[in-house]
Length: 336
Image: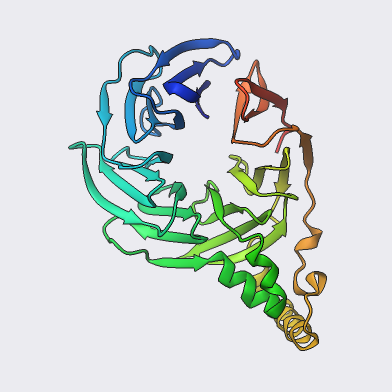
């Protein structure tokens, strides 16, 4: 489910694709060819009328203003596609699939220019705003990667499980029972900050600096896996959806950039880590100030969240939630 300029697109099982207008009314419906479910939809940033939708291992290019037979169909992935991303000039499309492959399609010549890889299912990809060659990805291999499209290898990689074990010491054994499989990525409008939601219920915020990124914030966002994260256009307001049936709104601005910039706080954090390692137990409050992060809004959706979006419908900001049912739920969103 995605939205742009008053239009919202959603996909369902059996290749069903629908587009909704700013009044929340159905503007078009189409059954895409093949037997695949529509797992991902994305509008072109350069031309909002152009819509890309994945169905099975295929991607179709459509005109969102008048849904009809696809203008073009890409069949370059070998497994089901989980996520699509288009860069701002609409020169490249990234399609991430169950085999861990990310096919980069040159939209000028409509051919694959490069294949990037995770070692397990690649669940999410996102281009960084104003940086058309810079791509972020994450997957069920617990890896978060930063890519330059001109290179076949990632510029920087973080393993979420390794990070957890480093911070928590020996008591991180519990992570083996609830590993931080990475489900979703979203990049803030600044292009340098992004969030990642994982199976362990944590939300992690990273900052990109040059050719690498570092974790700036991590907090327990949900009691079950975090299936979706979405940065709102306002700076550092983040929506998260979880397998616990909750949708939460967070203001992470207080944590972004603070931990790295304060030597005193960094020293205090290192001392706390050393102390807890000596004691052989994990003191979460001592290790992190992230317990201060509390949701600004809680929506008790009640069902596992498959996808999140936000839109202005009938003049008001709304949160759109897709789940296992055939309905899209709409909730009011306060000004961020």
